[in-house]
Amino acid sequence: MSGPGDVPPEILDRLRPICRRLPEIHEEPAWIGVRWRIRARTVAHVYTPDPERFPVYAQHLVEGEAPTVMTFRVPLEDLLGLVSAGFPFFRAPWGTNVAAVVLGAHTDWDEIDELITDSYCEMAPRFLAARVTSGA
Image 1: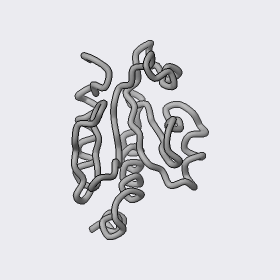
Image 2: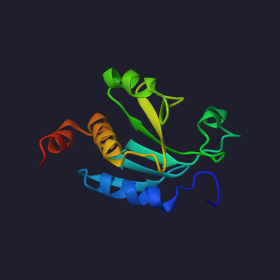
Image 3: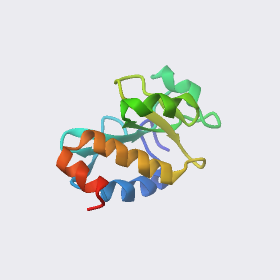
């Protein structure tokens, strides 16, 4: 990787097809990394934080390297259950219903698909979320 915020291409190659199937979602560069949004609301944000600048990520180093992290929204009733098991999940250091996951070789991409879909349904207008949950 060339610097903080850069996301390994193999991670983006896994996330893009998941996100592209969601109605009206778009990808854009973020202040760090890449994010997917529905209108002006972020569904998922992937980045590589600098643990020296953001010490909260230091505990999530992978083999001594900065982790690739994705933040996403979780229904409040599911948040504690998701993050209580620990690695690779943790509560993001901001927001009330924001979780984070460390992505890498250990990642269960089917689970990531489900989590991004749930995040989309949290952030999208109801009529768009209904298209996803109904399979339309």
